[in-house]
Length: 331
Image: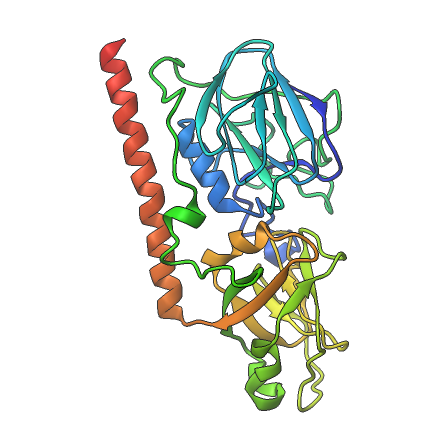
């Protein structure tokens, strides 16, 4: 059992989302940084889709009432266990009564707490994720509040698990060769021209060529971008159509919106581009006020990056399994 001691707005239970229900108006949802979720779950011996805590307002503090393995991923901020620093991106063992605290990250927007067995909240439409707009899933459809209690799923005997010291090189470093550098504080986000790209002047050069700033009006549904407005060469009346996370739409004001994890299920604004799926976690870690630039990509590059991420996760799983077998042999 986990007790929430300190929290802020919009900290929720999330997993990898509930795809497959957009036709009835239910957004897929799920974590803003799914790579951090997958990595944390591998570290604590869970299946990749196990439910975790997504923290986006800090400080955050919880207490455990039973021994459990945990890992904090996503963050570049301080992680403390009983007021002592512990490594993020690393599996640790918490004992009954231990207090875990997450401080404000240095540059990133979110942290994730994965625990052995995952969070045992009801499965709705195949997912444990919190849908705040629909008021369902996760912690009764609500953000976490002080005094809330979360059950954890059954975990294996703790001793054979990679319970302490198993760490990973975080994705931004381990996969530095496949993710573009942040240049002068500008996040480079790869995208592919979308359906209405041809409607914009000079092949959309104003979209690709400038640095955009993430507006303070951004949230899990979408990132609104501030910059020099872009306009289509012709105005077309468009029917509403399906959209998914990563789609970049341009409303009449000319400042793009990137659909994020809680993306609307449909919309009628022109689609100028689509962020490749493998880069969405980097956007999920970008703060309001941050700067981004779109970089033209291709389906082939997107597949290559996706394969590199898959290999990274497989390597972690293989290492975790080796440690687990070694500990069992020693027990």
